Length: 147
Image (cartoon, rainbow, N blue to C red):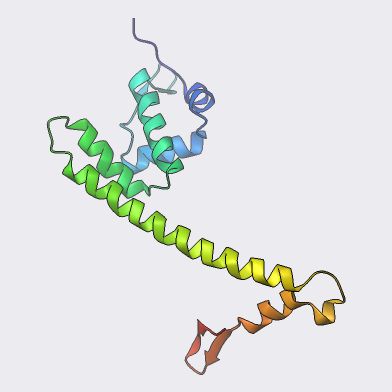
C-alpha cells in the first residue's frame, strides 16, 4: 500500500517549510498533490524525493528556473543530458566568478583590518575605508562606486 504524507510531515522529513512546498507547487516544480477526505494535501514518496532534489539544488546555489529545467530533464529520462551539463557548467562558472570576487573582498578587508588595531574611532582605518567607497552621485542619480 502506498504511503501518503501531510504537508507538516513532508516539511519535517525534508527540512522544507510548508510555505516553500506550496510555493514549489505554484511554480510547477511539484505536481499538485492529491487531497484527502478533509481537503488536506497528501504527498507520496516521489514528492518527497522531488523536494529533496529541489533542496539539494538550492543548497548548490541553483536558481529555481535551473532546477525546473533539470526536473524537466529528469521527468524525461530518454532526453539527452547536454542541457543538464550546460546548466551545471554555467552555474559553476558563475560560482567561480563569485568566489574570485569574494577573495578580492577578503583581501581588501584583510589589509584594512591589519592597518587598524586599536586606537580611536576618529582615526579608524576601517571606518575611513568605508567612507572612501561611497557611490558617485550626480543629478541623474547615484551609481558607480569610487575607490
